[in-house]
Image 1 (tube, rainbow, N blue to C red):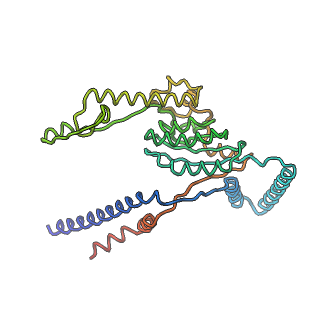
Image 2 (cartoon, rainbow, N blue to C red):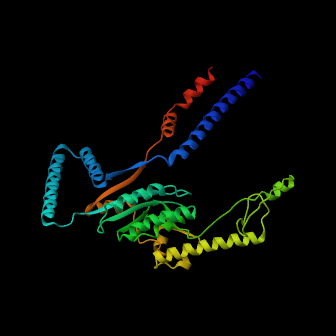
Image 3 (cartoon, helix red, strand yellow):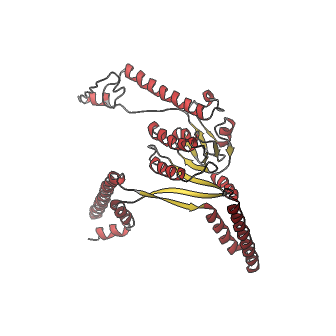
Length: 342
């Protein structure tokens, strides 16, 4: 009996501590989100050619014997010298520099929240890009809200409107809103088992009206405008409201289909707008993509003939986020032991 009492006390202390930590984290996260818009950020640029060369040199240094390393270093110096000479010659002749490729990463969520960084990255690139350059977007997204992904697609449209080549590379998934973004590109490349398509619209919500009615709880919903509210969580839904809700979904679906058709006229839109998604090889058969390859393969190939730069907009962390970072570094097991030993 005493063991159970002590165990119960231990459990209560542990739950109390964890609950307190969770509340603190939630409060800090709320403040952080509120202050996020006030915080700025900055653009970071990484030379991908140099990064790949460094990886190659490091590996060669490890696997080659001393004699081979010397020979390799000699060849590398010779190559760099010839490259430098060629660049000087081009500069004298006034010919254009090597083509530049700008790489952007887009990690999509339901709200398309990465559009905040995307718009800054696109603006930065367009301020320096020439028509001979290219932009590559490594896109990963299962889709989400229409207005969020509509804005993200519009950011990519800015690139195409400037007559700069845009390639979208998909390694895992570009579905629904993600594919809405992808179809803007002049070229879409995807890994063989990447998932693409899902040209459809879905919406769902629970309704608690009968549950509340059985407990004698009334919910009043007042609107000004016949279709201000079609379906509701707590009120009684009507057939007329359901019909209007479905009509709105069908209208969004029609807009989505037209958008894909305008940007990829080679697609048989009626065949692919069923809401289904296809893996890379099947997506190629349906003209949803143009080539099958990973983003790594595509970008590495570009490095052979172009100067490739990874462009990233980094949000500055506010004081609360920096505090949370410090807090996340605390050893919770040690903290719990100290608390329980009191």
